Image (cartoon, rainbow, N blue to C red; front, side, top):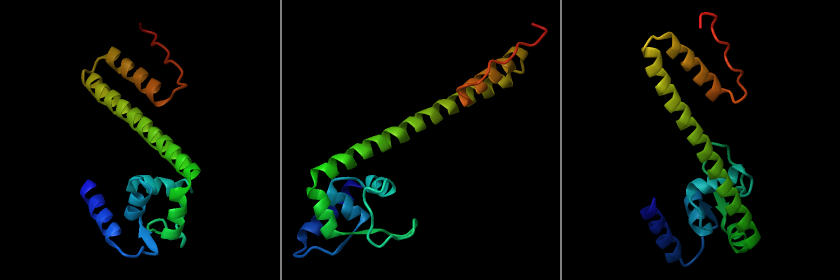
Length: 143
């Protein structure tokens, strides 16, 4: 990605004119974000392609509008804060999923032991991790 950005930077600086439209990668370089950040800004409606392409279509942006946004410190601060919050949210959900995967692997080992107490422990762990408001399981009568 870094080599691609250097290549784009040299091509954009080498032009004697500015192109009217820029792709996501060139837009990212011009505004100082990454390509993934640009797609997040589009989804948050902070950056809107002028032609309203379909979700799976290629997106381009007007260079004139990008220059205005680039010089607007309020927009840059808002976009930067939105990106930080976006990645914080994505990373926290990823951590939760990683923890759930670790618990599931542990549960597989417990269930393989085929012990009654191991199965009860497994049921309690699943209910506690999958539902934050889970009710504790009642103890069996034979304990």
